Length: 116
Length: 111
Image (cartoon, rainbow over all chains, first blue to last red; front, side, top):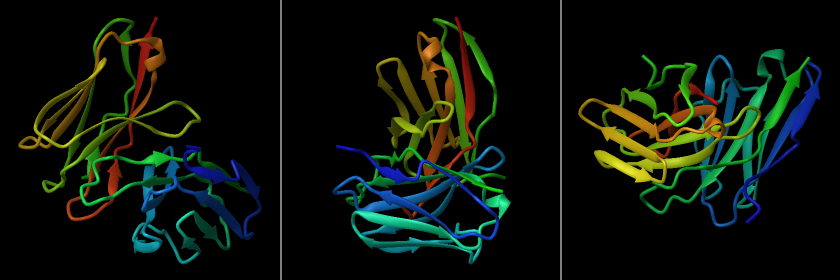
């Protein structure tokens, strides 16, 4: 099992540019989550999907953020246009629901985004 | 009030001692709770989960849940320097699959 795979590991971009973060969940997991982590705010849930369908995007900070999951093995988080305050580590996580989700998440290695 | 609260620390304990990490939550309907360990520059990794009142033991780790007091704790026995990390508490918001994380407690185990 390769775990949750995120790319790129690091991204440095200029303010105003479009940024796309990618995630491949663990095969068989039916939930996928995007989190953002900063020193000040900790881990914040941005959006989560169940069976490729967005269930709750109330954590997406602004319209500049969008996320898609076109199939069970791939998801993207896009920021357009990017701003310096978007600088953070973005984590993707996946889990297996099956009615009583006491299994917790498996996190990817994260993408460290720096917007200059 | 934050939904899941933790003392940011750092909590310093000598090697071999018991480290006690605490977490409180505000959503009375929360059913499942998780402890994650995060080393600097790494992603969180799951240590334990608990959903019943009482204690749950796994090796050197014991998770405790008190739903009446809305309190979750993690005890680490025989602490080792390799346990030095940030420990994140998370609760599943009632009626959802959303897991809300505390900001974490930094633990330092002194050799």
